[in-house]
Amino acid sequence: MDIPKIGDIQFQNVHRLGELKDGKELIIIARFTSFNDRERVNRASKLKNKPPISKYQEYPREINDRRKTHSSRKEFQMQRQHDKLLVDGENDLEPSSSSKLLSAQQRKYVDGSGPPSSARQHRPPDRKDTIPGDDDGLDVSKMKPIVIQSMNKAFQDHEKLYDDISKSYQDMLKELHCFKSAFDEDTSGIPELATCVRILVHRCGQTSLEVQRRKYCVQIIFSEQTLMKNSLTDPHQIISSLKHFNFMNKHLKEVLKDSHSIQKSINILLKDKDSMQQQIIKECLPADQGPGVVYNVKENMRTLEQIRKNIDVIKKISEAQLKDVIESSKGFFANAE
Image 1 (cartoon, rainbow, N blue to C red):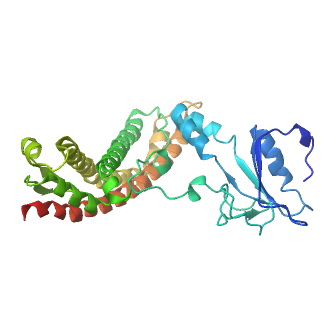
Image 2: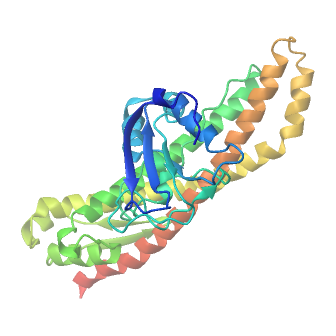
Image 3: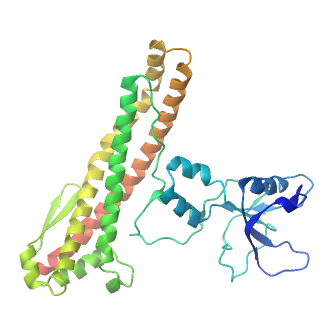
């Protein structure tokens, strides 16, 4: 590629994937020191009358994880455009089998066309009970302020409702992770819920466990004193596992109990878009405020649409989790036989 002042481009590191072959362009993965340098190479790859160059871009996962911990959401979005990866090479050239940087299954786009890919699409699947984070894509933009108080309150109320249900969902998954973690050794690191329950019941010995099926959840009633006497293993660990199971169900109930009503309320607000525009006109806002209010309302409507989609994801996962809980809870009746 012909790049003006190519000697000025600074790299953090560069890797060549595969063995050098005559007449073949190799896939090269490069991390740039600055975003401007990356853009210079990116623009050069799109020039006419040049050999086709396929590119694949992704965000380094370790940088994402670090910045999520130390940066606000706004700062993270601004900073993540730096340190992108650019891969150059022939369209049909696959990396060698020994390469750990790229998989042969990665898609490549010629001349820069096609959507940018996410690193999440190409990393190995996580364990089902791994504690989730921002990578779940359930984070949304904060609601923008509206000078019309009634309208502003409606947006802020729905933002709080979503924050509450999102927190309950995350807490549910964390409690599930804590519950399964106690059975990693006995399940070869694949702790399915039904298997964990059977192991837990065995550890309880002759202790009586009462299963209460409630709406949207299951609760286990037990006596800590009886467990201290009859358990076959560490009674404190057993009590902790039972509490994690109950807490997980408590958060599951909070998610399923509120998700439908929140979605219904959001749908009503989204359908009320025209009346909101009329209300803005009736307020006779100063000329310097009107456009800002209209813009903020549109942005908040987009946020509401994203919240509705996120709640749909949360609800589907939680409903599947409830079915798994109900089916797995049958194992608690084993100690009654």
